[in-house]
Length: 246
Length: 251
Image 1 (tube, chains in turn green, cyan):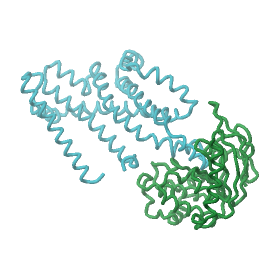
Image 2 (tube, rainbow over the protein chains, first blue to last red; image 1 turned 90 degrees about the horizontal axis):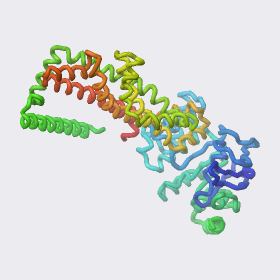
Image 3 (cartoon, rainbow over the protein chains, first blue to last red; image 1 turned 180 degrees about the horizontal axis):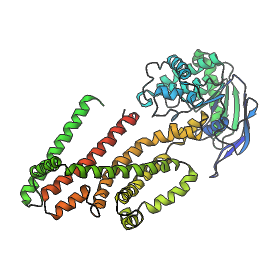
């Protein structure tokens, strides 16, 4: 479904963000990408969405080379994803508006989605008036309103406190199990990568390249966090992250 | 804004106003010169000017000149500042801004009179030129410093360039634009006085020079008060617009 083929990215100033990145994510699979900060994770997502062009190699989604943003793909950012000058409702319905849905269709989709995400009653608030956990849920609402087949996330939970973070991780897990969309989650938390990734791709420090792809078949359960095998997996990921960091 | 806070703000305006009047009064008593009449004398002159109607017609003409100047300046500076977001455009705009902004544009007066005559047009244009740069510099800075992540966020929703301007660049810059306009009010009133002090028999600037030459100091200060009120009024209007349009900034 998603394929990265020999992706290398060099910026005009000469820094090499990614080198020969190769991986494949099957349709309906959930995959975590983890690596030290500055390993080009964000660059990778921008290439996969078609916002940025790789210097060499290519991204392929559903058999087609990625050249521009696709309707099938939604991207959730860590910060700045929401526009502070738009209300919760306006933020959540923006994607639909840009894709030409009329007012009535937008209202139907967004209202039920906001209710589902526990944001009912906050439609006319501005992002600044919400807690960071709620803000991030609005960002998810905007991405999910488009009913994407593929959900790409750039450290969506990293600015949240531990408890909020865990509840949103649970939310993402339920979402994945319910809708069976293809998810790619970039994170720098090992526990998060293990909890949410059916496969875990470990990137090295800059220039980022794939060190290892770890299979994580045991995931998919909300209780996974408390199981021994979860901790084993975290240790395994930690070891390969540490090799990459050196 | 909660009601109590508004009230507190009005009260502090009132107290400051009284304070200024008190200093003025004391200064007038200490200097004891006809060149500085007491606030009360000026107040009577002001009322007399209003009753007679001349002060109002001069005030209206000045207000229009400032308004047109500000409107002309912002209608050019805002679009240019916004599209400076594009690297390609900024390459052309930035050198102009850096070379032309630091020049005191008021010295261009002879050139402007040569080109546009000595009528209202050249007065409006001089105000516009000076204010244009203030608004352009601020708008350009705002659109250039916009976080690229906002743009990425739009691109991921497959937004067109037009969408990005409509939903991100313009709304993100509006608070800075309105602040620049608010600051420009003060500048434009100063320029107004300059352009009205010659070759016209209308406007508050003319009235100030005229009362001065007649050594009618109460009239002179009454006109200064009118000019201050004009600036204050415009400032308040823009501030009100700002509070309404940029609600997201003030919450």
